[in-house]
Image (spheres, rainbow, N blue to C red):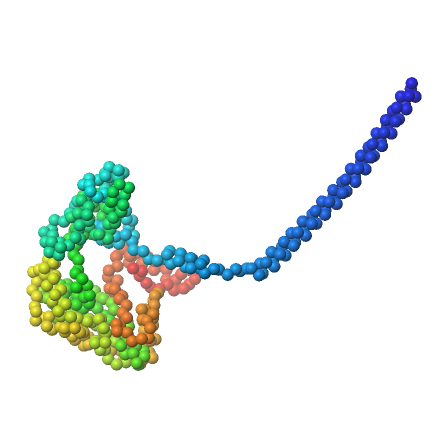
Length: 426
């Protein structure tokens, strides 16, 4: 019995050892094959990645940079032009001014109704436009009735008869009916909400009427002959052409200087000598100044002056009490330059070769002069750049600006030791 048990145990041990050895052998064989397969797979992946890198590098050398299509170029040019174009700011319908700095807003006024719509959420806070209603009989009779003008007719019961600028009113379509979009700046809106006339409103005796089409071609010299008040002196600097074969090509600039006196006319028009007292011409170049070659720069027409004065007498209350002298009109030519302007010329005689250099030196600025873009052909009109009203002594600069500039000028040099220019930015 014991021998049988020993024999069974011995056989079980042998079988267990045999099967254990067999199992370990199979696992070793399979483990080696798996490691070899993993290494082979890893090698194949590296080869594939290397081939892809080589192909991408070869492709980039031939396909990059790619040429941009003309459609894309024109699309980008259109976007740039549209983003950089100057757009007119909205016009305030009350004062008629462009609102570049102050914020404008609009509110709808529905047509066909005499009350503010209940649907408008801010109806109780709307500006009171009724203070702008026209009540001046002179304007009604001479500027509206006599000229059969519809300047203050808007086809809107809420706006008809109000002194508003049509440039600030836009007709729009609503879901049920049309309405007018009225632009009002913040300054005028503050006054209107208090039921007061704004300071710069057209209704605050600032309406000057509409100029007829026949007087829209008035030259600035003709306007000076018809003006009641003059407080500026005009200086024109003309450069003759540097080419000897183009004596009519003139270019330069003109500026106005304020005077400490105001010239008030009691009898109109002003005489040629009165106008010449406020004009100066500096002619640079060979030869002498010839007014007949300046085009419309000093052009004047006596019939245009007289017709304009008669129109002003009937439509402008400032001209109604004045006297008008027909003999003064005969002092002007029918169609020609201002008499006596050649005597107001100061000649700076230099050679033709020096004209161009001096012109570029004296007209240097951020933008080039208009004459820089002109062709060399003979022009009928001189290219004149208007410089505005000059203030060389800074008399029109507010005191606070001068004090601020003085405080900034304590340091005469910047951090790098460069000397700062003595300028007043105004």
